[in-house]
Image: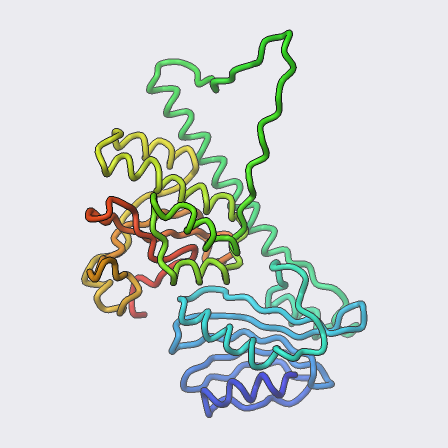
Length: 326
């Protein structure tokens, strides 16, 4: 398996060769900068690859599991849709007929953790993904801190204590539980887009990127799309005050701001542009949640308003788009 992986890299960068078994090291070619660990058998390995051409960093591993089978996994640490496409191509060619199995969770161990486990005298025994847990907890803390500050501001503006509005049923009537709302998954984005096409337009490339994304809060993603389809649209069509949108975004812990300067967008090809009704539209706005570059915990939704159709056009989600050529 390791030899197939290195051969795949070598076809794209002739300066990258297959390392000797039982080694840890790094090498830099014309396109790739690779750090690796390979076990004594030469079959099990972990690698972190920085791709200068696709502007991305990703990791991949193939290690023994307690069941006796090999377990493989991949993760895009940071990068563009192009970097994700490169990772997908590698995975399909190298691991498509893998005799083992894919790792059962998207919380894959980081490269440094696999190296530490793989180079220990006992071999690869177990790996805990503490970095993923820490990042998830940090994201939760940031959200609740933001929400607490928002509610405090709302209380001060009203001159009193903020009290959530709760309607209780009469004492003689049993409370009826609300109907269970559907829990939309990222893989359902095409269906959601079709059902809501009269309120918001989600471009095919955005649907494709969402289906492949490891983002771990699909409920928040759909809440943001609903925010754009409802409150933002009402503001743009003059049916609501702009504070109706901003107040709800603040309560959700969502930042609303411009995307990039048009001159920068022009240097990045079509990443920040979409075709709508034969016209080229600039994705000049975006919603943001989280500061981590880890794709599992960071949300970005790039969009624009189409005055002709009176709808929001979503051109990319849920990951970062680059904001420079570097």
